[in-house]
Length: 339
Image (cartoon, rainbow, N blue to C red; front, side):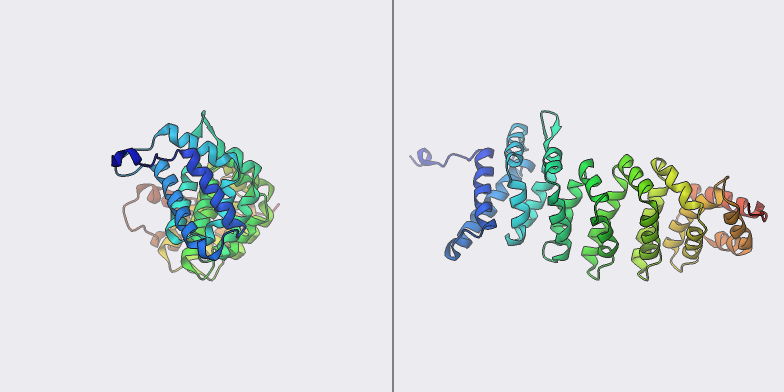
């Protein structure tokens, strides 16, 4: 007899709708204090159920049809916005589950289309909320993780790159809270490396202010970790073929060469090696301006000595080949008259 009264499992649509209703009430503070904990427990359970549908569990793999229906319902109305707005009110486990749900939904296809991208294109202001979340230590890492998942969509990355938000990252990645700073650095890197054509267009259109800030605030920062991350990211950007025009412009600047030469003299071997990967572009450029060539000539003996002592911790034939080529190039340079 007991089996006759089993509760019928809720469908993905029902779970999302009930969850949305509860989130609406929390968002508007429409829950009496004596009922708040009870409703929060219910909401946390619903969020966990959504996560299980999307990820499966120890007993079953995710069911594609259930995932599709959940995704459709989730993006049909304002569930995403409510979840983001209410995240600070959730307990830690529910926040973790919600973050994983958002990550999964960015990849879910409905009839061969990522409907998350369409939703975010119409709700770009959600990125404003997520970026502002870095200022709240309780939710910064959750919002940061959500933000990176949303950047998977080119329309989101383009929006952030073209907004004033990008300038905030120069400060965020140097926050005293190491975990938040590292998370912001990961987001900054994602913005500047994931979508090649968008990044190339942005760097070309914003070269002057972007690299002026990049040099002064990051490459010349007093923070060792900031300098190390910045020179590594600089190499990732300039060595990407899609950024060839920006690369030529960067390595043709005497101010940029000065910064790179200073980084080559850093006590940190990791910074020296990362700086070398950018410096070699200046030295190996067969069309280098005369003032660049003359700076290299004026510092020839110091550079050759410094590069001769530069070694990686493990065998790296490509690095050794590049270093030999750069040293030969510098050794063969002669002073040139400026045009």
